[in-house]
Image (tube, helix red, strand yellow):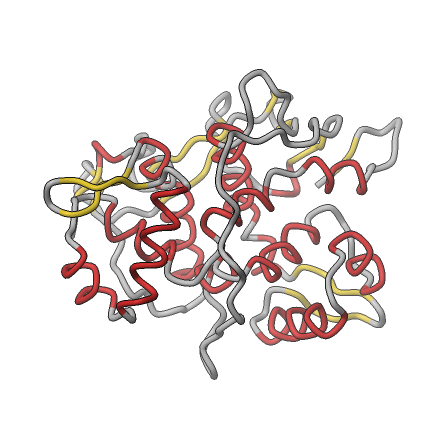
Length: 292
């Protein structure tokens, strides 16, 4: 990710203006994304979610209450239904699944089928030129305004991070732990030294060390001397970060507040990302997909 040639990257300003922490307050808990995914294509009852997700009853009740308070779902005759903001999480869910598939992570749920008849292989592209979004083709503009958020309740108390022992790190595990996701997001601003990460994230040293170790073991970061650099696998998370930012700018920022500006170098336009099917190049939304 590049910056304007006439000025250095104002990391502190960009981090302070990032909407990512607010998005993670909404979905950055274990099971939250799984619940959203389970409700994408149909309403489900508490019992159906309980049986389908194999989640502890108390945990499911707490996550449903939280997602309802965050306006991502609402009660329905059949149980629970996604709101418009919950449905708009489709790009995040789809891209997380696609990243897992490309990284040999066993998917717990299959990708849906696109209207072209093929199993969905989502691709985030620039709306202006239809080229895939790649971090190496992005130039950051001026930092956004510090987020002024829509009136939402306080996020849930953070639970201890839970990672699958002996298995590849999944995108759901990254997004399901706020600190892990924040380390990844910060890495895209070029912050690589342990001390700089600790400064920008105000994270306890033991927590930061633990997350860095897990990200290195998971092949997302690699340590070189005193620096932690994104691997090729880590760089492939960028479209997911863009989707997080787009969702937060649309659903969490108050109206008329300037978001982070990113420019797509191949076409020179302000980046407006949209989800496409890589098989047919058609747009992807809930009306164009169905269960396998």
